[in-house]
Image (cartoon, rainbow, N blue to C red; front, side, top):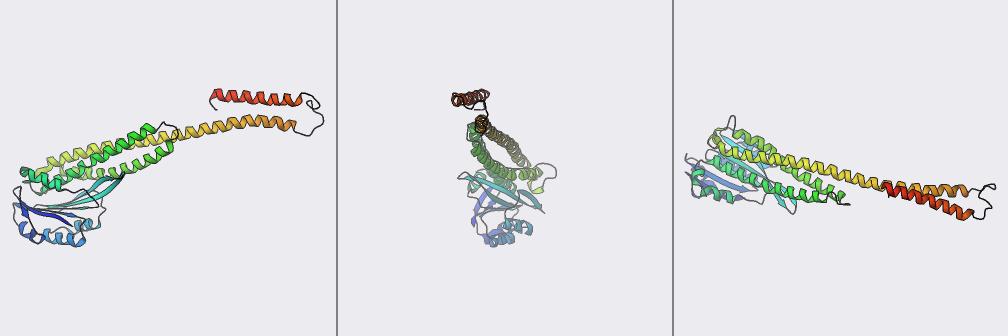
Length: 321
């Protein structure tokens, strides 16, 4: 679906144009066209390929979707793939933003994402001195918007982790905590898969052999690289904390189970002694010291009670009961 199609010249908006007129505007060296699509159909991407001369492999990746974050160079153009992350109903949803960049065009298409980029376009149009740098600055602005949206996701994960950590040592909550921690671990893994590949890709835009199309804007991409680096470090830290929290919870579960086993063993010992006494006295022998004794029954009860009471006292003192 077409969101907008706008022509710019010397950093200023000329007008909204029809798709059929794109080829006329891209012919001008001081003009570029910025097209935005949402959940683009194959027919729309094919039309854009004809208008802008997009590389067929890049178009194929955009059609297939579910690509790993990357930045690829095709001649004098770039193709960037980024993951757009959003939290809905406590679920982390993954969208995809594909950006085609040439000397005189920018084509952005977002899939499975509800967050638009109208604010990015408005920001660029408010800064004509930056927009004058052409399509490379638009790529930076789009990428900056995607990366900035990672910070709220990371903050939300950290807040959830803090809540779980507060419950770790509350008796009886360990199993529920482990389930929450594994859910958090999954979210962190999704964030890691969005950040780490993009960090590596953006590093190629501000150091070493920089593609000519972004040579004048590499300082901006260095800023994005710094943001991604900070997020990546934080993600690694959160992953370690989650791993530690899971181990602590498993240890607490093992301790609780050990406490139960100790109680069962203690009661088994107490009843075992009583069973042994009554087992002996219950045997059918004629010649036994206790037989024919008037106080035999109460004495037997007293001995068993005293022995069991002593065992209960010792187990209680040692913390088994």
